[in-house]
Length: 386
Image (tube, rainbow, N blue to C red):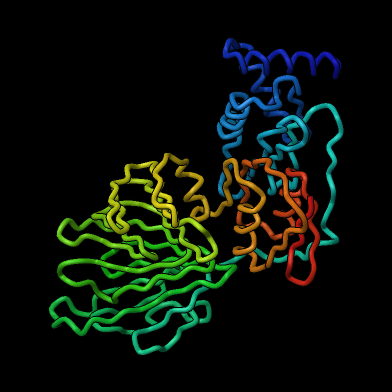
């Protein structure tokens, strides 16, 4: 079968997948062809690739199903919702250094920016711990093991670079109430286990203030930036998170709070369990998949993709119908760079997933090749132009 015949055959099979009437043998034929594409581009017909959400979802799930690599192999998918057929979908298997492109038969306008963007490393585990007496501990420079003692707790850094609080003596009389604060700069994340066993992930430019040991009646912390919680269940002690004017109350659950100072909206997303959101006279109980958006205009609750929300905790940037402003804010925080937009930007949306382990140059190359933007670098500032 020559290239023209192969292309026609793949178009036929892809069309059947779209319509849902492909049989087992045809599906196997398509899958066999798909697996052979690890070192070449493959073609998706423009007449049904563009503006087709159903095909978008089918291709994405096909990618998820077929590219099940081990931990040594990272893959990413990127596509522009409005132009899937024109080099707006990029899959990268960086372990092989290979690009997959979902594209039409016209040549993609791929622009190399390697010489313009410094090869900045991604963020890392780094944070400052402030003790109750004001002493600051640079956790990156601290050795593993015990680093301090506060009240009834020993403070340790374990082998996974996680700060944990352990009881010094369960029979000891309760010491006076003390709080610690952990904060991450831009370009850093850190993990923390509180005295009750609650697990906490801090995203870049975030902070949490918490007691070194909790009272007999309640567990309360305050945060800024973006923080993910896996709360240890204790029905007798509600867990409360304070951010701005919003109070979140839970017993045991997994949820994410995004409350950066430069954002107009505080987003609380429930992954598992249930939480109660309160702000002034407003109270609402979230269910898994719900996101509460708190702003000066009140509170709105809607459904979201929780994988997108918690992707940062799992080592990815993940976007669903995001604009270029949203994308660049996350890049700015993670790589500790500033971003300036020169002129108006288009309203086209962007959906994709990129490993946060990649250097800045690689990430910006993906973004530029997946959107109609031009990126340059001046000092530590990324200039974004249409």
